Length: 112
Image (cartoon, rainbow, N blue to C red; front, top):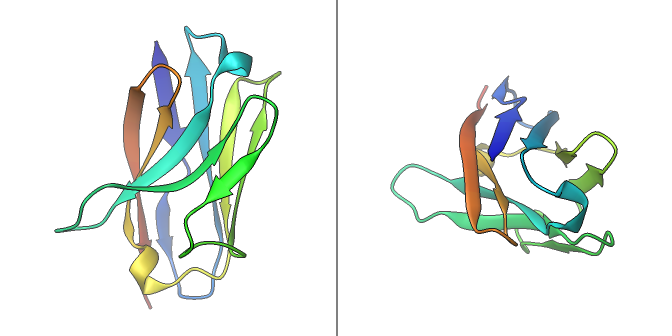
């Protein structure tokens, strides 16, 4: 099983980034997938999740700014992040909630 996250980087406040998480070794279409983040000195928190049928769920702090989506043909889950704020700075992780399996993180830094 492998969950390979990518797309992090440095962005100015108000900017956008799209994270990707490519899965292998799992029946991706049947998995509930999620994006989590962990800021320095804080607990890891759920940012967004998407069920196999496409139903989504978001943390209140990102509603209206972030969009989670999935492409089952590509075994990939995405997190489109718009209107980024400094408080969005964190390491972002993808996870199979179905398998309770974490991918490696990708760092997002929002700073001018």
